[in-house]
Image 1: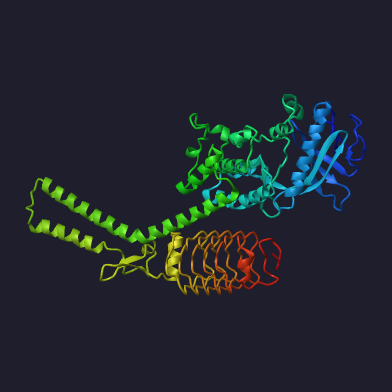
Image 2 (image 1 turned 45 degrees about the vertical axis):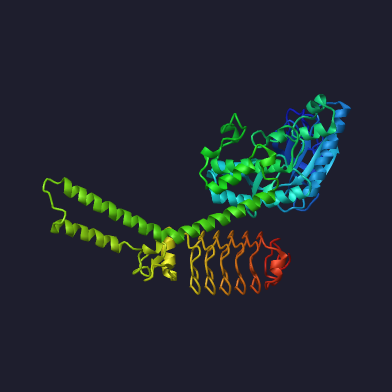
Length: 537
């Protein structure tokens, strides 16, 4: 089928074998190369079409955006043309990024303007939420770790996107990566803006108002800044967490802030980051994508440290809780005895026997220390005991105890001494090894995807063929670690020590790691670099 792009055409659908539209007589093949298959979307500025490029082998699918000035006024035509050229220039600057659609062509035909872009096959995040439900906190953090670097790149090109929202973020079908689409500055009818104000600057910014609810106040007032995109990303996060559009949440009448907190269940630290992303005042909002990335990293550190401290204090907390239960039991027994119709003297053998048994139970309530190597129940209880001097010490876990504990729901093994531990082929996704000692540990072929290994000591560890996708390894020590064949895609290796680490054949696609770090490690032509290319940065 061929589709007519004439805005006035009453029957735009045509058979493949015709050259001109059967309804209006318009030429069907754009620029003698683009066959329009159908309409993808329509708005006040024009329309978007799916097309085939007939001049390229394979006839690849692409997207054609049509700008339609709705007025014959020469001033309107001049303004529309200027806006069209600006959008083309913008796409030309940012289109070299692998997660931004490439600009393929642009042209003017019959006083209408056309932009041709790469077609991205996949579902947008709005569709994802509708189909699968809201994201988890971890899922949204992963979303931010992927989108914010794109935003950072775009802003470095002196471009403000102005319309970030779930519908403009597509999960590409081929590699599941996010692609940011729709960089069109033209959002409303040209003539309506020009009629109200002939200022070129006002007209251009007025076309970039964005989407209500996702755009911050300064953008709606025609004064967008880089932080305006940060605000839109924050609102997008709230949508992903709640499945609710901002227009359904309401606004605080006193502050103008979106009232979103009651719709989501997230940690306080992450909520604080989102609040600052969505500050109504630009003065108090994060100014850049990098500031948000830094805040998220600090949040992860704080959370990991907090979890580590909880592990360290868990044994003492249980000891105090057991003492409290024992004390309450003594009180209840004494009350029961004193209120009984048969009065038992305080110093009677019966009362002495009861108190003796409770005190004996109180003595036995010290942190468990006799069966920790054999019991998976005790394995979840802090791994703490007191030596003869009363000083608390941490047990060195064996592999089976750790795995049993993990299978019973414990994920927190922060700050533990796990040197030389054999966890080969263990399935431990999402585990917390923050600041853990894993020197010379055997983790070959283990699954530690999304694990927290921040500041962990993995020097000399066997990490061959390990799954560390999306793992956090910031500030970790990987000196002389064997990472041959390891999957480190999308892992965070910021400031990790890679001196003499063996990364031959490892997959570092989209990993956060610098060239300077990799220069200290051993790589070869089989190593997949962050760029996705083998052996080349």
